[in-house]
Length: 431
Image 1 (cartoon, helix red, strand yellow):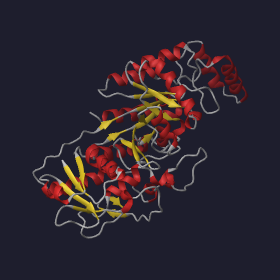
Image 2 (spheres, one colour):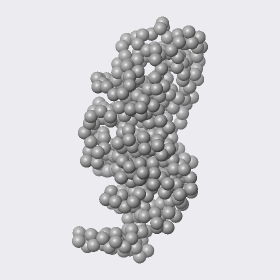
Image 3 (tube, rainbow, N blue to C red):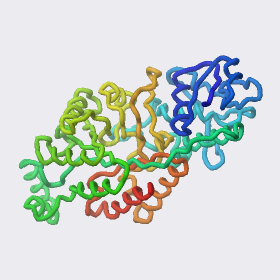
Image 4 (tube, helix red, strand yellow):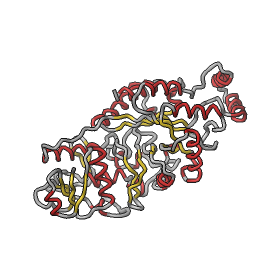
């Protein structure tokens, strides 16, 4: 066990140390403000304060973990070996940067509470982030820093045996529309037909009626392929269905359709099933509760996983709503148009409420790759290369790689050609 001496034990401090020590390094950690307890401890120990006590392992602390609320932080990012660091510590510290304050800044999404420019959907953009602007978005820096801490501890306590975690993958399949043509009802089918005619989409019109008459499989119906892939893996996919009411933003099949309910049930036999919260559920907890109860009645178990439509988050409200409804797994933390590590880590972490200064039971599973972000790379070779680099970054720290693909990503539609092999590349990386 690692004992940390500090002048003040705060919720921010315990939250951050537990993520770094326990979740990433597999190391139990406890805290003390009593010098005599610290001296008496005969295993791993370090001090995290302004001045070292004597010649112990010492990391000079930034004020961030001892503050409350938000303040205007002066952040200078510097090169640190093959990565970046900020909150420099000075000469006497055994680490050149306060990795704990830096990690808290990234995990709490501190910058997303500060004034920034949103996109047209009200989303925080990658270009607004510290990581993007200082070119470390492509690295799980918190995990890299944690391994640097481990190296320093190992040097000071050479007999201690650290546990080694394993690289994992956690594929997410997002289902905003289960079928492209089928089960849409008469009005939507007639509307789609007229639209095809007006826009001279004759090929699509032919495809529409080939599907409706049972001659062809619906292009979005890739669920047999998904189940086949799941059967080949010893880890569970997370499949998230949109079951909210029809609206401008949400256009899935109605849950009154028996075939749609049967589909959800059959997927739940093999995969972990959750909900893709509808656009309007983001700001209205009563709509979200209705969708949660609806899904629970279909899968006959408590709802655990959720992802918000359009990857939209309103911090801290979105996450507080999940905590209130006792939904404990979120898959919304990531960027829709950029590969990388929005929260600086490839290790699932707890949501810390900056307004209430408390760690919550909600586990955030940050995703590092959305299929749409791969579309900007022209060739399949480019897509594969960028995806492989991302996988290698996660593998280097034995983290958890979380990609988000959609059911239609595995279709034969021209946009998505080659994406099945990209998904296979991810699955094979766990072997």
